[in-house]
Image (cartoon, rainbow, N blue to C red; front, side, top):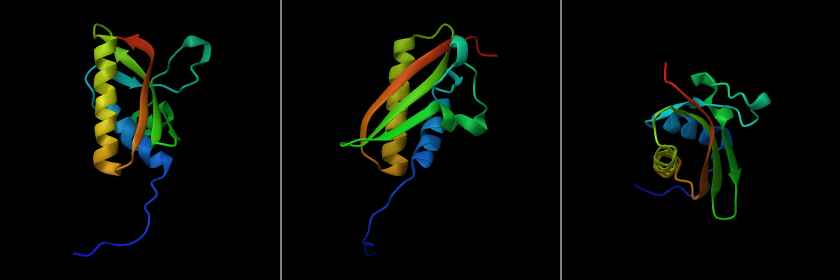
Length: 114
C-alpha cells in the first residue's frame, strides 16, 4: 500500500454536520438551536438543519467549535456539556482527523424531552 501525496481539505459545513450528528447522540441533548436566538426564545432545529447550531472557525492550532444546544430538564448542565465536548472531540479526531483548538458549549435553553 502506498501513500498518496497531497493535502486534504475538509469543508467547514462537513465538519458542522459531523459535530451536529455527534451532539445529537449525547445523553441530555434535546436539540440544536441557531446561535442568534430571537427575543431569548431558542427554537429547536430539525435534524436536517443541525449545522445551523454549530459554528466552526479555523484557528492557528486547529478548529474552534461553538455548539448551541438545548438540554434536557433534570440533567446536570456541567456533565452534559463535558460529555458533549468529549463526544465532539472524538468525532472530529476519528472521522475528519482535524486538529481541535477548542470546543465551547452554549446552553440556550432547558426543556422537557417530549
